[in-house]
Structure formats: structure tokens, C-alpha cells
Image (cartoon, rainbow, N blue to C red; front, side, top):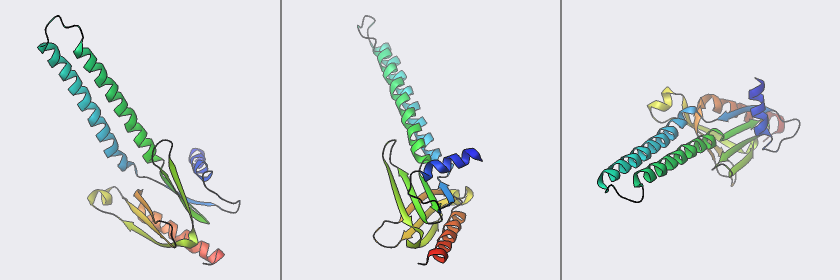
Length: 189
């Protein structure tokens, strides 16, 4: 429990809060969203490795015995480097995915979206400005694995918050609406 609280505190430091404000919930992305990231990254790395080694073997068989450059070795090394970079960027994409978060406090909702390792966007919205909370689950996998898209519609000029791959989206929506109602009771509209 202490480790989980440390993670929550890490995200709370990114948003403005006062001492009377308390954390209601932290919504992270569902792990099922990592499946396409890893499958794609590992597939591309495997194809690059197979193609580079295959080309190297083919070229060595086609070339004369007294070629100056070891083309097969060079293509194999290039393939290994490209595959390693592909695996590295796959893990970077997974890290970025896992750090996208919605924080709900007693006063506000904040969305932290990472675009890459260094670029992030933090949007904060008073709970009084929340107009509607919608949950959308599309497809069989979303229902089986209990994830969906959480849409928080806002008042004014600020964009709506769309948070895909939300785990247990109906429960998250209930918590958000409950926090909004408590905020309206405490502070008015």
C-alpha cells in the first residue's frame, strides 16, 4: 500500500492542490492496451532480424569468394542494431502509455498525457466545470477485459477529456460523478 501511495503522490506533485484537497482516485490505462504495442514492436524486430540475416546469407552465397567487404556480416550487424532500437522504442512506447493518468481530487480533475519521454500535457479542470461523464465500450474485448473510453465533457472552451483504455470505466465514472456531486454540495455550482 505504501508503494501505491508513493505513485499517487508522484502524480499529485504535478498538479496544483491545496492542503484541504484530498485524492479521490487515480485512473491509469488498462494493461490490455500494451498488447498491440508489444506485438507490433516485437514483430517488427523479428522481421528485421530475419530479413537481415537472410539477406546476409543469400548475398554471401551469391558473391564471389574474394569479396573485400563482408556484406553478410554488415547486414547482420545492421539488423541487430535496428532490431535493438525497435525493442527499445517499444519499451519507450509502453512507458509513455503506462504514465497517462487521470487524477480526481475533491476539488478538480487533472489529465496527464505523455506524448513521448519528454513531452507531456497536464490539463486541470474544476469539478464544477464537469458537465457530463460518458463511458463507451466498443467490441467484445472491451466487455470481456472490462475497459473502455471515459469521456469527461467540460463547460466552456476547454476540450473534453477522452481517456481510452480506462479499466473498469463504469466504476471510474461513478467515482468521478460522486466527487463532482460532493464538490457541488461543498462549494456550490
